[in-house]
Image 1 (cartoon, chains in turn cyan, red):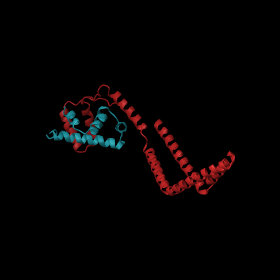
Image 2: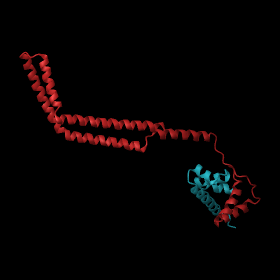
Image 3: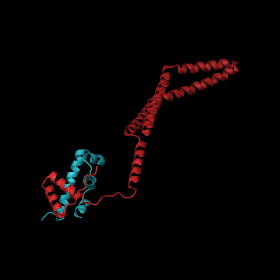
Image 4: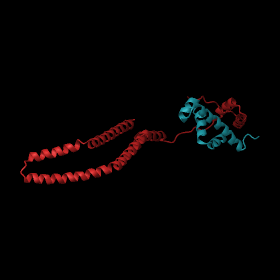
Length: 65
Length: 179
């Protein structure tokens, strides 16, 4: 699956943030505890990871048409 | 807390493209909602067998080694004690060397004269108690000299201070290793 392949190309911190947030369903507070970073940083990780994933997929030609 | 699973959209490709558009156009709320739905289609990440046990073992050993290691303040205190001791020892050796040499020579003189006196006294028939009393008076007068007394007091004070510092360090070390 495209999304899974794109995820593998993210840096580990971003990949972990996305998996914990959207697969495990963690809130940002829980995410900050698990990752050992402040809550604001956890939110930033998630947003940047999604953005990075979108960029990766666009780089693979998805979303052009 | 697990999020409720939602059915994947029929056209995953179209949803993916829509999410990307939202994402790249900074429509954060819409992008998050779309990605949440898309992520339900991702395969679950499963930890390899024994992973939890390995993590617990690693955490346990990390805690043990961290508590066994002396803290930075302990190490700094040790270095300070060593530096202070060496400085005192060097300063003492340099400043006391001439005095020690003088005292050693005078001690030799006293010992020689005392020996000669003892031999003469024994020849002239003095009893043992007279000789012991004379020796005692000589030793007593030497100890009663201010310079000698001050030296003894100084050496004792340095020794007490060093013992106190060592005791504090050992106590602190024992407490930190208990944590």
